[in-house]
Length: 161
Image 1 (cartoon, rainbow, N blue to C red):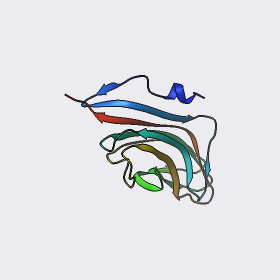
Image 2: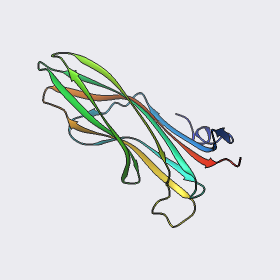
Image 3: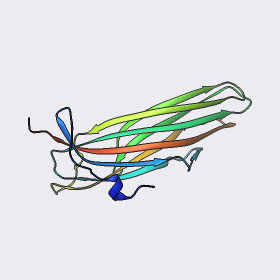
Image 4: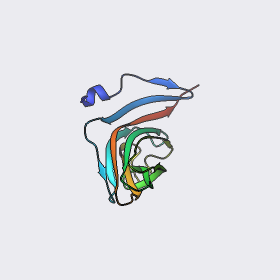
């Protein structure tokens, strides 16, 4: 596990017309989540946003698997990025299975939060983001688990060009 200092900023990096001013990440390869019916938070990040004009670029990759018992079935999961308690991005993914089969799946999420300080009075502050998965449909006899995930957040400020 890397420390906050290792996860922090190593200097400004220009991307297109924006400058990366802070980078945070979270990864998990050893703590699978077995899903049934309750949403599960896979990761949480806090980013210090320095100015209301800055944006936050969010990326996530989640690897998950499904095992089907004796029946042919379909499992559907909803992956979400939340700012505080509000969903700001979501995508659903399904896996269609034949009897007694295993499917290994991968979902990628990418979103730019153009207003990360929405609801804040201050011009700067810490913003918390969460990566969550919610089972929409997991039939009886089907077993779903997350295998690993990486979640990143990058503060972006407009470059003076």
